[in-house]
Length: 147
Length: 190
Image (cartoon, rainbow over all chains, first blue to last red; front, side, top):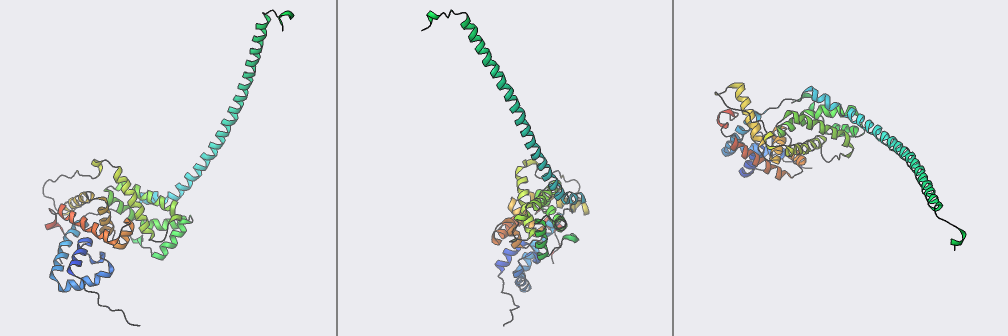
């Protein structure tokens, strides 16, 4: 088995320029496989050093924008997520149970109401019958009039 | 960088499996490892610490509720960044234009020291906020979060070449918009 070569593939100035444009002056941010070749180029190419210096200036400005670590309150809230999720799942379960119970109750009540309503209809029918009887009571229904 | 942020790849996957099984202690481990990164990323993307905290909370809620759907093709951290990035984009697009950046920074007498650094920071924040979303996300992930190009590309679901193009355009725009600050405020050349 042969030992892998420790000498990186040479890097062109064009590639170096593209990488410095994208990743800036900090070689640790560059693709790991190209870092060694970039260092070799930097040792022999002044233009590569100039490009790196330019990029370093912008890196410095960008680094001035710092943001603080999150407040402990945020960590506490985020740690509560599983508890809150469990609570809301349980609440949802209860809500569902209540919804089923409520709709059953509605069903029973409306059933009872409909039954009462049917009784009223029966009363109405009785009244219709009585009205008809009283109407025919005024008519002379002697036997000769009948067919 | 926060001391408790380190979590090796294999450990991270194991912890993720436990989270998927509803293990609250494993969830706590992931929060301690990654919460600061998610908050910082979101704050740099949105320019608002309050919104960044909301995004972080929502990101970890999704972690807890959807961990079983996680596929180990990317690191859990990459997956979290992707969730946070999508939430940031949703929020950013819902905003009214005037609420995007705090621009209430008027220059008075020539500042010095801490004040100058604060002003530089605010100008960089403003310049960053003016970048197109994907350029801003790419720059934040690579420059500020120190993600390798390949992982940043996974977060944004693009190729490494496309990521490098986004980064180049972002840096070019920033160089232009921050050129008034550049000569005396950048780092010294080596």
